[in-house]
Amino acid sequence: MSDNHIKTNLKPHHTPANEPQAGKRGLLLSFIIFMAWVVIIGLFISLVPCHQNEPIIFVIKVGSL
View (cartoon, rainbow, N blue to C red):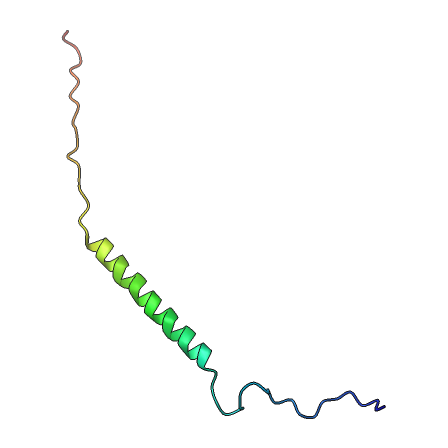
């Protein structure tokens, strides 16, 4: 048996070295589309006007009962 355990061929066997992995590109595109939807929905929610209540003023008379 050989005592040399160093591997000389370290290239990945599942994809060729010059091709990009398709899953990463699809995942990045999905993430960008998801974040665009989050931004669009957030902008629409921020455009909804908030209902402002009229302040109630309490007048208390001091002195004459």
